[in-house]
Amino acid sequence: MSAKDVTTFQKWAMATVFAVYFLIFIGGLVRVSGAGLGCPDWPRCYGLWIPPTSVAQLPPQYDPLTFNPVLTWIEYLNRLVGVIVGFFILILAGLAVKNFSKRTHILVPSLASLVLVVFQAWLGKIVVSSELHPFIVTLHLVMALVIVSLLIYVAMQARELHHHEVELLINDKQSKIVLGLWVAVMLQIVLGTQVRETLEWLSREYPLLNEFDWLERARGIGIAHSIYGTLLTIAIVWIGRRQLKENQLSPFLSDVVKFSIVIALAQIGVGGLLVKLGIPQAVQVFHQWMSSLLVGFVMAWFIGLKAAEKRAHARSQVAQPSTVELTV
Figure 1 (cartoon, rainbow, N blue to C red):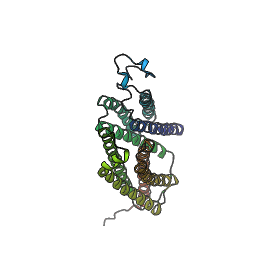
Figure 2: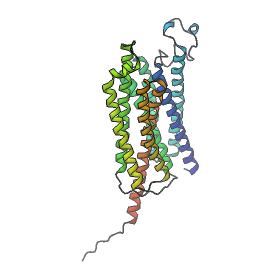
Figure 3: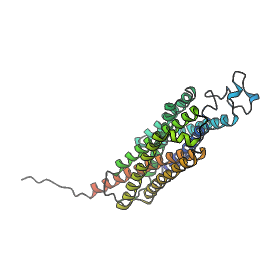
Figure 4: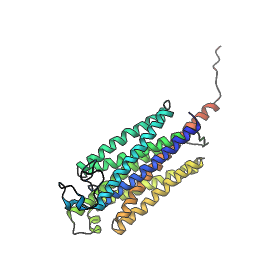
């Protein structure tokens, strides 16, 4: 395996990460625009491989009143990008098999991401057939975040093969704390989906009320989401600043920590805008997308710390003088 192979794999892994994040953005757009059932069947759309653009193109078995060309094409774009992402991950898995067959820490997560993206495609079908069942929709989002986290793990592990930064770690258990932050961010996103589902239910049950009335009726779960998010942000800022102060981190890892802090703080501001402006769709999309970015940066933070801890442990083992027992 040459350095060129490692670089090519790392670049493809990062390109795949960007592609997945674009897909997550499109998925958020589908959700807030109400385009989830823009195509009432799967994998085709209104029985066609290329969706119709007008009522005149609809097959006779479909009700014209259910057709909205804008929503249909938003959902179709989501599916099209999903297929492209699937091929990205397939190629990544192939490169892993070719170049890292003996490096299980790269091979296994690469293959796992391929298995999960196939499961995610099947889950997309269930989302449509269940008519956007809340649990299935939430699971669909969580699986996307797990996949992007796996891909970031793969990219970071490939990076470790030819980037050898030197960090001075005082506490070798810090990565476990950051892994806990990653879990906490995932739980916050799940809680956020419950807020959104509550608001969607209220909009269907009380169509004559406005957005602020819906927010008032969903006040309980909204307050829980806000309090949890604020505490999580405080934890990320406090832990991040402390690690930056107490450890000599590499420039790359320092930037990852700083970006995690910035995104967490920005999310508080965006969440406040959602409430103040009456949950506008554009802000909803960016709020969800920024949450997924935070998942990725915290995962990169964890992996970077874990690698630094291993290097620090290896240096300490080399530095320890060997002892020889003398028997009389």
